[in-house]
Image (cartoon, rainbow, N blue to C red; front, side, top):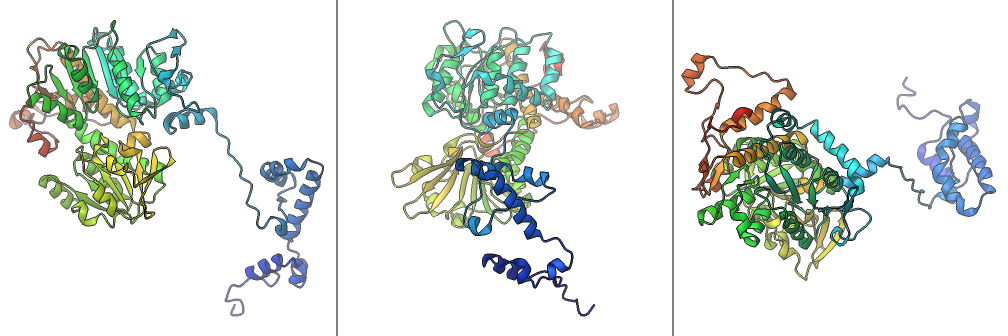
Length: 595
């Protein structure tokens, strides 16, 4: 044992460095080894490899010289199997400096369609869809999408999403016969994904007519848009719209002389603002507006405060189900996927600044921390800042840490959060992206100045290069990262989509005078109902209060279980929202049977 204690190689084998040197010098391995390898009875691997190479070369000799590379690429593995694992191996003296032939793994048609639908900018045809004659199987129609031929694959995507969206499917079954939205003409501007397609088709099943545009130029899934069109829904959207095309789609979605909307479902406020400014008479005749984003809600409160809001509006963004589930869990899961797909970054040890510690910021920070990132938070609200500190994050000004960070993520919903002076100080390779709704959080105008150069690297990834060679990595041109650069979890979106559907039903069926021309929050009973629709998928069983317990707490045993002032809101925003109303449960509403 002492003799072999160093666990060296057997006597019949050269040490790795000696074997490599002998091969480079063209020496015979057996002579270099003193002939001992053969005497040991061990298989001479190099001889096997050379024999296999000679057979391969003999087969290739009669072929045209142009076909040789193809043979090298396609047949090594097959030949190895045919010759009992005698693997082809090219002569090292000829192939040492030659790069390996690249092989291409084929993709199934379904995989190709999925990749094109979700990840690519457009199809091979780069011309704008609005320059083409739009035609479906039923002939020319009122829509504008990229490629109607992708409809079948888009339908598969929608069917997959339906499996993870139990509330909307339940709503179709319970209220489909009553058609509570019969006569409603809903014009929508949201992300057009498989999940929102389930919402749109639910509204149609409840009796509504729908026309739809996209609220983000990068988030539309072209195949899903095609599936909606094939189902008879007018859609004006495609992935990779220009700014001009974005507004063109919204304008054409609003309607024609024969179709005018009476309800708006918006995400970001762009559609509402467009109709308010360009079609003021149409806006006054609406029955209501439903808005789900903090950006759009803030616009509505501004109109209300100025006395210019002429219709009632529902604030879905500040509902408990939206704040606690969509904003938190949705962003917690999707921010990492968006970053991974675009940058292939490893998060461990990276220094990251998250601007804003609302529910979106909380989700992003939790996800990044779990993967080992060093996370800093910037915040204007002392309550949110204290929460960040209690959760173990250092609250700091961006200017104090900007020279050292590897990544900055904006989550405020505000504007001018990351300015040119911050960008100038960032180190080479810093990643800049946005998880808020609008691209206004990052100073894009400053980045488009003449002294900086833009290099497009891959879909939704740009390098912005400074004169000294420094570059930052900008994702999705400052637009919403997760919906622009990745897919999203259907289950969480089911919660928000169900809340939007309920808000539309309530506004459309409300009797005259129930709602003034103002902005309203959803009743707690509706939040609880939407949540209850999702519990069966977890096989969750609620405990029921006894009559004595309910009396002790001063609530109904059937809910609502929290007071109307119990909200998960952005407190700094709420202080400016002096005109907010909170709805109360009203049994006179004929559609409260859903609850």
